[in-house]
Length: 128
Image (cartoon, rainbow, N blue to C red; front, side, top):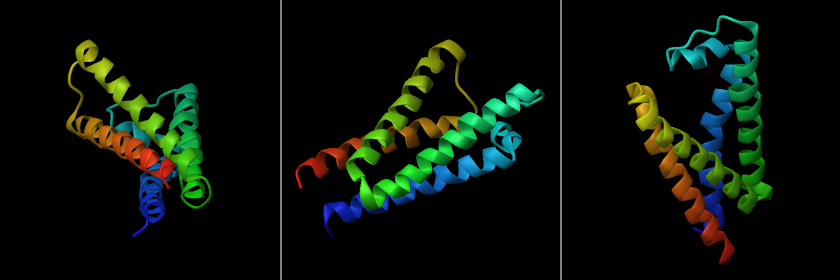
């Protein structure tokens, strides 16, 4: 199978959870925050969650779908930065805040693998 097809599959797979987080946060922001043991008890908290986890994730997910077909390199770069950003935040948090719950602890691995695969596919795509 050609590299571009593998990249397309990867981007589409990554789009699915990103879109699901975005849609869930837009319509039920508390469901997202339940995973991190937070209660959204103010309008500002719900608004920020809808914006960051909802709108931003929805747009990223849509871009990953678009990128799978029309802008693979750009989508891979954004996805790599997205994953690296999460990993940096979690690594900074570990010594400062301690170990998060099991749900969140799994994500450092998922985010690191996502970032590494994105960089790998990005490098492969420059050779084709």
